[in-house]
Picture 1 (spheres, one colour):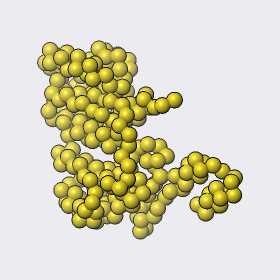
Picture 2 (cartoon, helix red, strand yellow):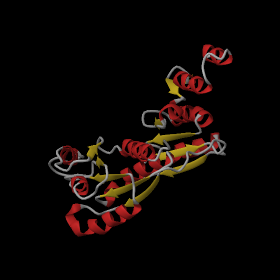
Picture 3 (tube, helix red, strand yellow):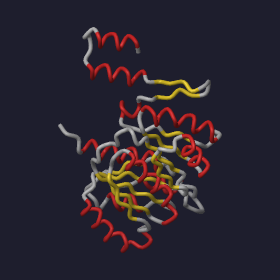
Length: 255
């Protein structure tokens, strides 16, 4: 890092190049258990996700605090009310969004600028049981500066419910649509066959019987005849949110 700063001082590299190299080297060790990529948000536009499962509350918070200081925002997955309370105690000034049913917590440093609001993503769920994954998707996309709209419980078992929602989606004019479904996962291929938009399909583990726990939904989405549909892993609303934000922001970048 010292070499980078020296090269900048000597005029050998530009400020932009120095920033790029510093981002690549922004690794901070926390005790003997973690290496934090503090430059990830600046380098890739993608957030750090601290998975709380398998860590004590104190360990999770210890990992969160450097990101609040450096990049200004961090997300926690499998978060609980204990994690929320611990972060509020450690950083009373932090701005927190927490969805207990989704286990997603977003903590933001109010002294750091928020991302410019760019792009739109629509989120559709087949059933109310898919809402925790939809909330994961929504919070992550909004964390990255993308406007969202959410349409729950319009699965293909009552196909008539879908068409008014698709009309609303088209009027919202998003760059991308996230479709979340369990059981057989049929909503995603149907939506892909009706919309002139990229679709991110999220299978959920709400299915039952043969192919339950998301396997049936995943298989349907992967086997879809409808083109323009990409699939993330079972229950991975976080990945869907990041991908949706990446598409929406990229589509609206200034050239």
